[in-house]
Image 1: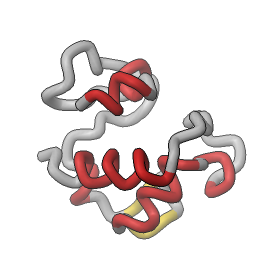
Image 2: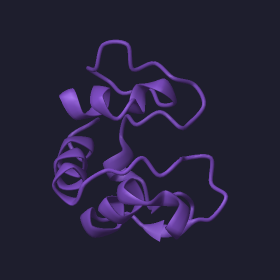
Image 3: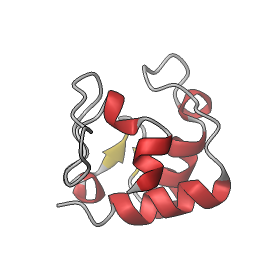
Image 4: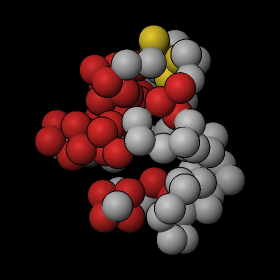
Length: 86
């Protein structure tokens, strides 16, 4: 997915099906849609995932994931993609 590449998600995360997305800093994103929580704090649903993607520092100040300036539309598209990962 081009947005994974555009925002550099694979620099920190392993993302199945995305070439070069083999980072080891953040958690692997396989099965992220099946997890109970995001960032250890938010119930995992589409709205909260979009919040997390758009501004993780606002959700969990000091988290290792930086705020990357993801637009609302891109956060929606990234969320839809991430929920397909198994």
